[in-house]
Length: 240
Image 1 (cartoon, rainbow, N blue to C red):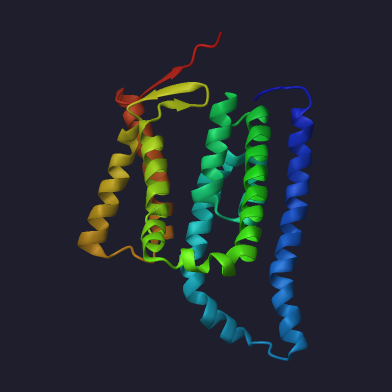
Image 2 (tube, rainbow, N blue to C red; image 1 turned 60 degrees about the vertical axis):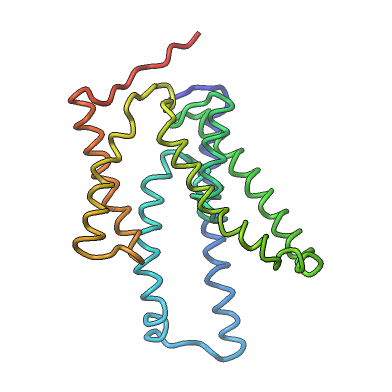
């Protein structure tokens, strides 16, 4: 671990504040609906809550678990604000990776933790500003936003974003203080397994969270086997 002066103290403080912030966020998320239901006397029964939430929980709980397992080592103490504000995959992770790359900080170090937290915090503030501007300008910009050309363009925004993330992940060889050769080989067995399961056994639509949970250990096992066979090579980056 990096022993940059003052950073270790910062990381401990960030974790403490993050835990407190998470409890406060959960209290608001659950408290506001409960207060409104109590005021207007529309409190649902436990069975109604279970029936209404079961479908969403089946889809989102596995996804949330897989995100926590796979993203927390990368995010460090910034995971708290990430999971509170959302948009982890399509916004926070790219910001973190870009911040680490620009500063030369490594994942899993105290300095990398601080850099990640700064990137996530700036991203969150920019998002809030953009959302606020969108709310204010929604009516004036409605003719432009509803134009067919704009609708067509916005339909390709997420595919383009995720496509660039995939390409960057596959083509990039740098991982912290190491260079990894043939890194894409680790994703081949999980990809084949998902394709075969989807088309030969059962479609995974709506169950992507379960598929992601299954792919995490399979990817780790594939990377370990290919590394042992010498197909994937890991070499330290020489620092001046």
